[in-house]
Image (cartoon, rainbow, N blue to C red; front, top):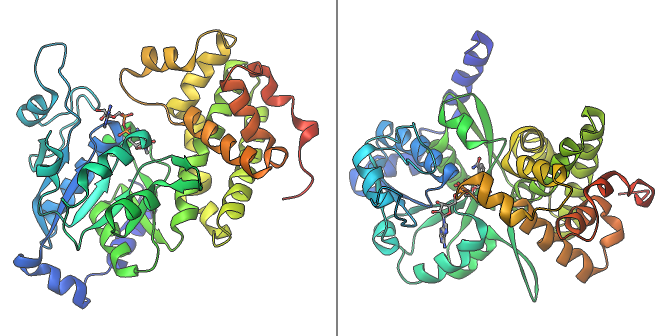
Length: 381
Ligand SMILES: NC(=O)c1ccc[n+]([C@@H]2O[C@H](COP(=O)([O-])OP(=O)(O)OC[C@H]3O[C@@H](n4cnc5c(N)ncnc54)[C@H](O)[C@@H]3O)[C@@H](O)[C@H]2O)c1
């Protein structure tokens, strides 16, 4: 690491909270926090690795990190959980990376959360509600949750962020962690940053920062759960648009324009839904940085590029199954959920990029339409 960066990292580590009563209590062995990671895909596995390095180092946490695995049988006939526990690697979703000997994979959800007071949710968003239903009455009353999940649920009464869904279903507080975090890059310890979004309790936010923070993964806290979560969710829609631009070989200027328009719609949509969302959040890692990395390198961009190269003739479902080997695409379903909100509220004309992405994904428009809406751009946001 460059000396200037190293100095900054050291300074930030020193500024982390260590001496208040909250931490002194937690240093007592009887009050040690126990962490469960709910999910074991690509990001879930990397999150477990990050967390496990810290629980070993910090006395206020139990060493062991439980990782709930949605069980599957590998082509070898072995159960994924057994292989993870034998090799210390998630051979399907994060091959070649040791998770840490203190990560224990567990296919039994109820057992995995038993006695844990820090629950890390990191599954594709479509599975969260079902998981929460199974957890009702099974978790500690004093548990805190954090969601690394990108996406939202659209219900009769309106859009529901995943952190709200977790809070409502389980009756616990839920923070979020989002950022420019392509999992495979963090897995090999390349430097990156992330943002913890919290509601009221700064001590809880600092506790999450401590759990994730490493010299190569710099985490800062922002008091804006909805803003942080919406940034992480909506940038996947913009990444689909960026993929269309790549597939049509339109070049970097066009892609930069799409990213700018996308950021503008992300901010406008977030503020219309939640007036409390702060402008400053869009300049945190969860905002512009995540947007850039996802439009340059993420899986949503990659599959959308293939969709455009095939002239929209192969479906996203088919391309996802072929290109991602079990990993899930979030941008297409998020575009559909956002579209539902826009049509329901009469906002379609205010968000030409978001609506065009959905109309392309659902086959109503060709991929080239991604740059054909410019005359429809609203004059002000
Ligand atoms: N991968 C990344 O780079 C990255 C980075 C930041 C955030 N995220 C977000 O993290 C979340 C989880 O993504 P990921 O990359 O860890 O997963 P993934 O897409 O790599 O893997 C899919 C996971 O879903 C599980 N699964 C399949 N069917 C299931 C079911 N019926 N019930 C429960 N689980 C089931 C699979 O076992 C697997 O663990 C997503 O919201 C994603 O947007 C991912």
